[in-house]
Image 1 (tube, rainbow, N blue to C red):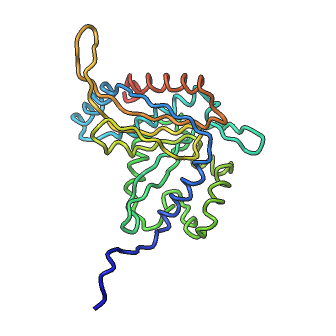
Image 2 (cartoon, rainbow, N blue to C red; image 1 turned 180 degrees about the horizontal axis):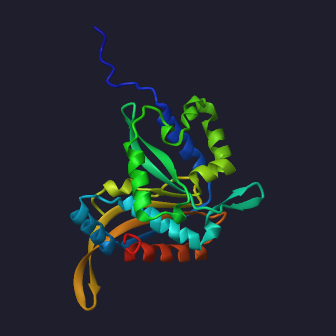
Length: 258
């Protein structure tokens, strides 16, 4: 009788190989990260009130996207990418949102592009994200009708990602601004340092409660952990700081929910 090997050997799926290739390429970028906490007590209250009135659970990710779109609209230089020796600035704000889907029994992230996000309401973006999550498929790329990506040989994946990063058609389809919400599944205060090809990448971490002083009283408030990452070849520290300040205020006040 043969002795047990003591391990299992499982071939890497295309989905996993694509993630590895993407991480390898994007770590070559010159990226700066900023970590912050945003008081989201008011938007969370409004989302809860909407649920109590209608039974509809609004997407916090969708709310972050609509706030990001409006902030980017006021900072158009950040809605850009470098192609050769030129800076290409996009007219419309397309925001790439990573959605976790189960494909062939494996949970994988797949991006969708929210096009003309600067013209859309919170409700429109919320519904667009929810509809994308409902779509069933066993092929990566089905959300954006890019299933042909699976035909790319593994040894060409890195080259494809590098070319796609500088491609105008891909920039219009997926944008150069992105949101990923992987950290929302954590219970404690958690930030993530992401990888990605976006000029501006917002990584949503966990929500934690903190006691703060407001108007002479100590009250419990909910804070969202956010990592804002910028392509340093395009964005310097000062404009990045101004951008984060405006984004934080936009998220905090909850006005775009109503």
